[in-house]
Amino acid sequence: MTTPPARIAAALGGAALSLGAVAVASRAVLAHQAGLARERIGKPLGELAVDADRLWRRSYAGEPVRLVMLGDSLAAGLGADRRKDTLGGRLARGLAHRAHRPVRLRTGAVVGAESATLDGQIDALGPDARADVAVIVVGGNDVTHRVPVDQAARSLAEAVERLRAMGCAVVVGTCPDLGALRPVPQPLRSLASRASRSLAAAQDASARAAGARVVSLRRTVGPVFVERPDEMFSLDRFHPSALGYRRTADALLPALAAALDESLASRMLARVDAVRLAEGMTDPTPDAWRRTDAYLAGILVERDDALEDAVEAQNASGLPPIEVSPLSAKLLQLLVRISGARRVLEVGTLGGYSAIAMARALPPDGYLLSIEAEPHNAEVARASIARAGVDDRVEVKVGRAAEVLPDVDGPFDLVFIDADKESNTLYLDHAARVGRPGAVVVVDNVVRAGRIADPGTEDEQVAGAQRGLEMLARDSRFDATALQTLDAKGWDGLAIAVLVDPGDSPGGAAGGSRGHH
Image (cartoon, rainbow, N blue to C red; front, top):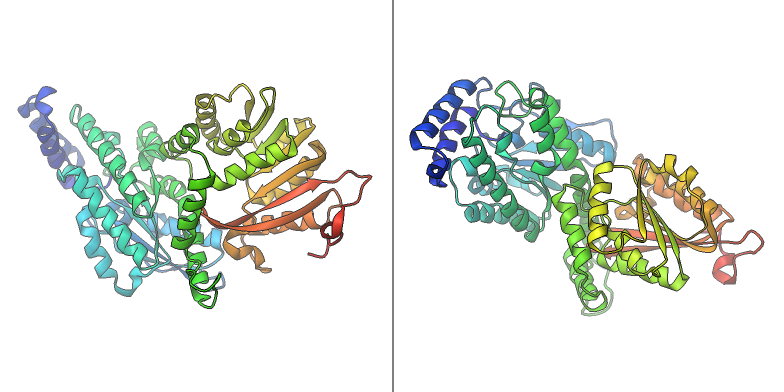
């Protein structure tokens, strides 16, 4: 999918032989297969991708977000006929829609590139390398050119570290599964698949360690390329079509948006150089708050293998890395215990991390109902919940929460809302309906990297979070507060409310200030 089609078959043949293909087929057979693949493929796309570099969505107000694309032909967009259908073009448009800001795209990716060339691509960018966020997709050519896995992974990590040192957030799409390339005959294709999976696993580990957000392209889009090759591949049957790039961009966009939030928060805090917690304390930069978060988690959060396994399963299944932090999970556990909760309602399951954490705090006869819109997410979560040994008290229902909640009956002692922010007011209304008086309601992600304070926002997730906070302030059924958080997940926050008995008024001085926030 990511190598110039004229070279891939011959390179795969060499790679297969070097990996011990004699045990599967003879050298003569593999050589014949490589020649056959070359004949099938040809070079219908050439080696130049459409130039997509421009300012996208210039109608949006504000300073443009700077987006850089690095890597090989997939990152360059080879196979797309129009610039808006390239991977960079689709990501730029999607990011602009989420951030409600124009996005300036700069492509440094080169058709045929290997991981070792990433350093040169960064050099060629010049000042543009100091972007807000970069996307790296590379690896296919490392496989076909028989680059050692550890060497390719090390080159990727060095590129990530260099970009991070310049203040650029990084998203890495790992090597696609070359086993999806139908023009390559068997057993050559299986050997290529095995090699690309090995590289992808090494890329995942090295890129995360270097500070990048990682998306497994094999897991997130690989199956659809295998099932619908006529639609997903372009003319050469190696590079994605417009639809293939759309599916790939959809897989990368959540991580890209999260990385941008982190980058903007970091830059905003860095500009406030007068902020000091106390003499001798460090600036509140992402590195500093992550170190602090790791320290606090290390001494206050006991190791839980099931929770760690749940995160690994979530990442391996291609789910976005947006679960709550370990300290936030511990907070949810404590809230369950403090409130004496026996019945918990969760809106938004993802991979089951928070559900497992809260279920750990329930009594043996407790019950947690978690609602998840995506069937794949629910399947991953159920498996992790079962491995954690709490499936006897956790039920995961599949469906859009707006459609499932009307049929949910209470009472619940605690409600945790962590789903689409646009629907926060709807979820809060149902929480008030099914929660008992005195029930705790927690709403996650209400600060949005500081954008919650923007009165003119056009970002629907930010606007949804604002509407939710306004409802908590004005609705007499709730008594609430909100806290900012700086942790392993970035700059965000949560709102905590208590459901008020209609016959009572909020107690205390703090309660008396409701409606004047």
